[in-house]
Image (cartoon, rainbow, N blue to C red; front, side):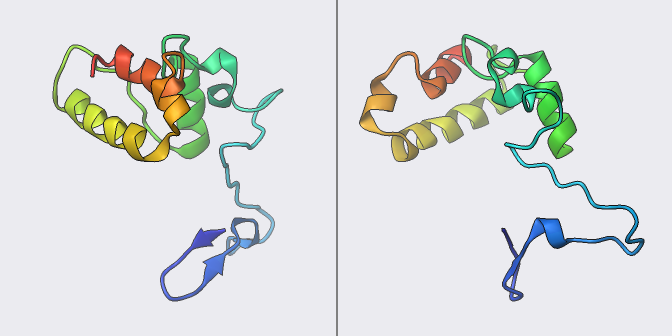
Length: 115
């Protein structure tokens, strides 16, 4: 469900265009675009050192209409923003076990970005 302001919740499967013959495509993380699901949700779309590889970023961008960029570990404003955001997520949204696990996705990402 997608919450909206003042109107309650909208079910994305009920959204229709004016021309009812064309259904609206709504992609979510678990949707199926290709055989076996989206690449960014599977091993082939993930970088073993953390984050997504080029194939994973491409599949995410296609599914969500986004424009994910490659990591910027050498420094710059994107790196500073990423590190600040992810450190907060690690502190608030992970369990103690995940936060201390060197092989967790969040710790791999922080290492890859040199945070």
